[in-house]
Image (tube, rainbow, N blue to C red):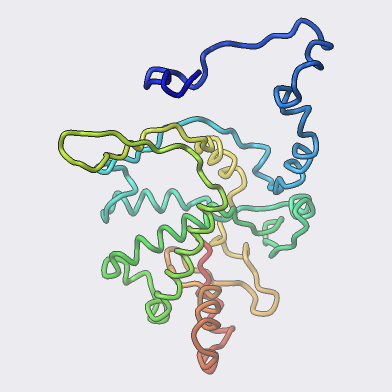
Length: 272
């Protein structure tokens, strides 16, 4: 078809399907037209080798869905209200999961053992959501000031910088290739953006159902025990983290450790 004959009404696929009456006829066609599976066995094997093992992977389902991306869209996670705060708390409630020894062997990792059996783990999606929540809190520091320690406020720029880069890496890691298009209006000489498009997404309800079965409450006495400092007195609802404290210290100044006492700080661990 000549380029001059192509119009906005011409579909990319015209509905024609090539059929071959025999295998010999198939073999006579140019290699470029043959099955992608037959032409790319090495690529298929490589893709399988690159799949990262996770105990949740076998319980995932992918669905096609349109995201709520209009400029004026609203949902329960938006704004700074009690309703939004409760929605975020519920969203993050499956942050900590109990892993089995087999789970750890499958990913060639070790982890902290739990008092009720098994080992402590966290799915990366919740670290990413934590970072989004942290950025959200930083936009309204006064509202969430009671959830931060004095050191949290000092470390906030470093923490936010860390979180922004985690979000960047996560976006680039998954690289959503859904196409965004444009359209003209009489209101502007600049094209309007049409964000409509179906995305390939995890069935979140199914994912949460799996997480519900593996969630562990680290605030139960005796569940999380430090081998040297005994029971870790973790505090529900606090943002401060022993681990965030260490990150901030390394990125700022070694002098931070002059007053640092692990025995004192361990009770500030926040894993939610």
